[in-house]
Image (cartoon, rainbow over all chains, first blue to last red; front, side, top):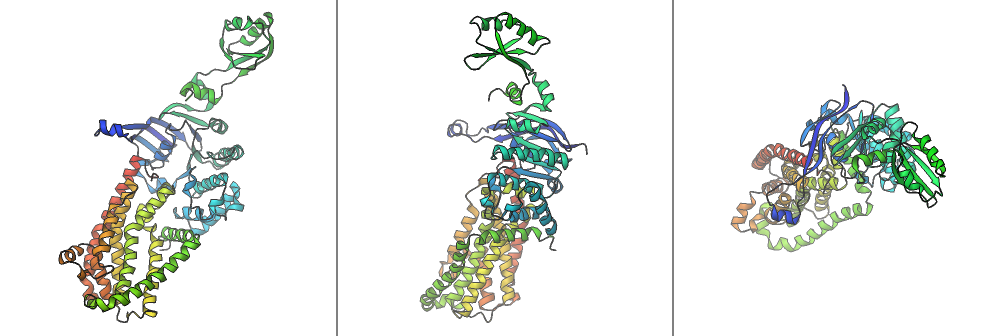
Length: 329
Length: 271
């Protein structure tokens, strides 16, 4: 089997909920909202792919379609070779689904009873279920709380339990929909480490993770899909996306107490891009990264009696790349 | 065998633990059984003297008549509304997607989701009948228990078919369940739950036989109160078997279509 996930021209249109005015003016016309627009990509086994996009970009729709929970309007999607529209039991056996929805557990039951119930739906033998619960909760650090009622869990513990539930039947491919949504920065960091080093690197699972958190996507540092209004804007590793974005590295030069005429002179220098906001006494200018550019600029500024505080190369962050594709939305 | 029962048993266990976690509610339910029986005992003292002609075909005892009606109506409610309530509950709890992504078959999920309610109702019914027989001396000495049980099982299956179609409505329209509501309301009114249908005007009596509840209830009372044998119960049994054979695959098909519609609309977890 070549790919864990193969998506070809996947499109999903939802029937739009009409406003009262639309009902009155267009009573028989059906209005659609395009959630996924001709999405295509392949994901090899044992890889981690971040679906990155703002709210409403189509991330959850894509994950749910791959889980056979939403039917596509057109196109094809194969998970481990299974066509998702066939809703094959074998397909369901091979996927795990981790959602951030805290509602998706029985709050009056303990974590253990919840896991026992959900694992039973995969027809696992009872001994194996109990063994697997012990293994996984130990591994994820939830052993002490596993016999407490779910309603007493913190957001981080609930998220951990959701991850354990998704892994109970040892699926090959795991879909995670904003797994760190309600976690504090420390817990989110631990979760990212867990996904990156344990689930993917150590256990060789394929993970498709949806997030709107740029830092998370950057921290996971694997393949990324930038999704905007249902369309793939960019797909690849960080360096590949950087190339696609044409978002170059730049030099930032900071000056202190410059002569009033100096900014106008600097703006006229070759490679000048923009002035960056700084404190009152310091001015910062950004230049294209060209060969010998920095030394030439510094020499010129010093010649104009400018006092250079610092000069450094600015490598574009994922946020910069994101902005070039999607804007500030 | 146990492997096949694993998922229904998991639902049963989960629902039991969930239910007993609400201790106060659980206790109230148990007390409710005693209070209902006691209320009908006092009511029967009033009714028995004035309604003997109507009750004669059933042995003449109103408490015996109404206890069976009451017991039966609980099964009717669970069969008609239990599935749709379970579907709505799983939608509201955000668990529907987790269930549908698992290896459990759709039919197993929907049937297992009400198994606890059926068992608790059975417990309630046994208590009703025991209280009736031991405390209030309801005469069940001639009862054909296997016949009554067989009719009860067939009735549960046939009413569950309607219940599954109701659940399909909930899957698509989220709230508002016209089928269960209509059949339950009509059954209370003309199905012979609390009073014999002979008290109804003749045209309503004819109409009442169109409901599956009326022949089922009649058959059950005849089996328990008059000790009717299997051959005597055959017309009721045949009607219920035919109804179930036709309706069960149809109702599961309707539910499958409803799930597909919800998947197309992307509304599985909406409520």
